[in-house]
Image 1 (cartoon, rainbow, N blue to C red):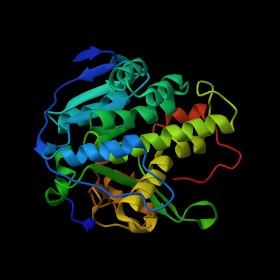
Image 2: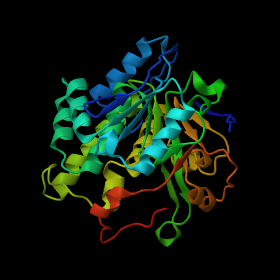
Image 3: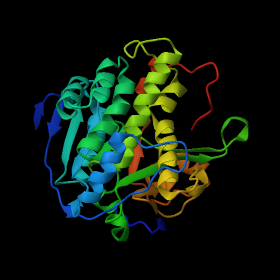
Length: 330
């Protein structure tokens, strides 16, 4: 099922690398089930997540929790990051804000996925911070739900206003568009979802499927480069493809194709003017999460409907050079 709708807008304690402020939960309803269309099959864990979701009615609303990650403690994140963090807390009173440092994230994974050796072993083996940072955001959303944002993202509109009321009950995951233009290599189409801001209820099958996909990508990349996960260092585009927004985008298309029994591609979401709900995944127009220049490059107008502002600190890029065949990106 695909639904489009207008969007509504308006103008601690530190332990194990986690800053905690406040949490509220509310029950709602949802259901969800289809088999993959092509040779792809859902893993046992994704199937289990779908079955669990079917049984949980009424179900919890989006947890009022905001996640972010960083290699340093909250006292050392820098003035800019602290200012961006403040926007989330100022605009979202009643939400719990959690910063997972590298050490805190490792503890979180071991404590919350003790029976899943594939997740724990893969995460603990990774030596590259950006690969861990991508994976931990998906793991936190699977286990606890809420909103994830990078440290260089500021909030512009309260989270409670992000989802149109008529679509909220049937929305399980919220994605935003990063790129939607023809500025790719050779004039090719560029389209992708952001992973600097994500929103999800707990235990969502799509998030589980995404984690499976990313873990498989990591092991395949290590094999390709003949390196261990601990030694794995990828080129910039490889990071985007293996764990980052390109991996998210590909996985979303695969998952939605299986759920709808159709072929879902960028064309289903290109040049959107309003939010579009497809099988529980709400895709917002590029204005919502995309940066100003990305909105302009897509041909859309900056109409004041931005929900977040991404400041593109890009601190990880310095340790990940462009590869020999690096693709042009926004």
